[in-house]
Image 1: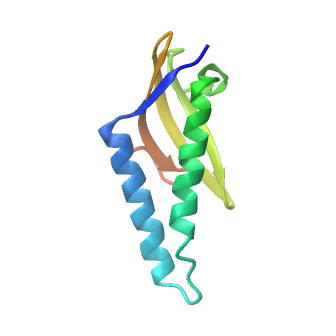
Image 2: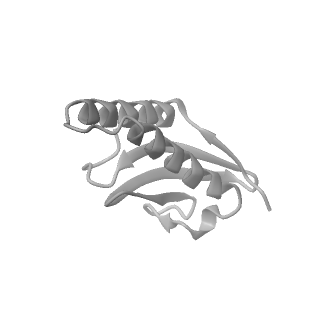
Amino acid sequence: MTFEVRLTRDAEADLDRLFDFLLERELGRDGCDLALPGQAIAALRSGIATLKTSPFTCRKAGQSPFLRELIVPFGRSGYVALFEIEDDSHVAVLAVRHQLEDDYH
C-alpha cells in the first residue's frame, strides 16, 4: 500500500522557519557551513518521504491512532514531524519542529 503525502501550509512554513533559523545561526559563526540548512531540509524531506510506505510505524501522538509523529535524525538531535493518516491512501504533515523546541508552532 502506498500513501500520498502532502505538507500543509503550516508544515511548509515550519520548513522555511527551520531553514531560516539554521541559516542565521551559521552566518553568525566563524567557519560557517552554509550547506547545513539545505542538508537539514533534505533530511526532513527524505524522512517525510518514508511516510509513503510506512506511516503506521511511527509513534502515536495523542488519543487518535491516526495522529502520529515521525522522528527525523539530524546532527546531534533532529526533528519531529506531526502528521495525520487521513484515510487509506492519504497522509497530511501538519507541523514540523526541532526536537529541542517546546512544541509545534
